Length: 159
Image 1 (cartoon, rainbow, N blue to C red):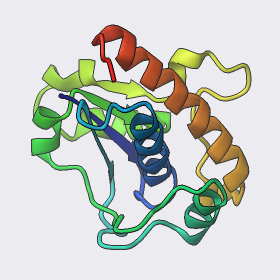
Image 2 (cartoon, rainbow, N blue to C red):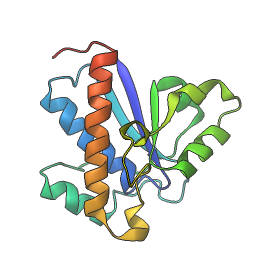
Image 3 (cartoon, rainbow, N blue to C red):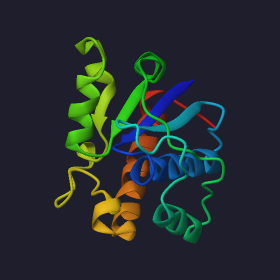
């Protein structure tokens, strides 16, 4: 089983959006038994909270559920458990690389949008500050498509 963790600052906007959207795409392709999906924050101030109402609304608009999702913070165990740790922005990457005791996990940590070589966005802007949940959804959707295709190809996954 391939294990993927989406990470942002507070785990109420971008990373839960990516988790829910990626889960919907994985399920639609019949790969739910081959890919484990979760999300987490680098900070702890939102622990136990549901996704931001803006995240809930944009996902509901696309018939994607956020039921039972609550914010959590990344733990040292997560670095061992997950194969891919996908960060929404450069600050998240920096914070993720500063948390574990060694650099042995650096190869697991990736900037979510970097492989897309997007002309305007190499990171997902935080809609908590921008208020632009549509743009965030569009970028997360593009990133999820890339990473799902990447995992299917790299790990030879079949439905």
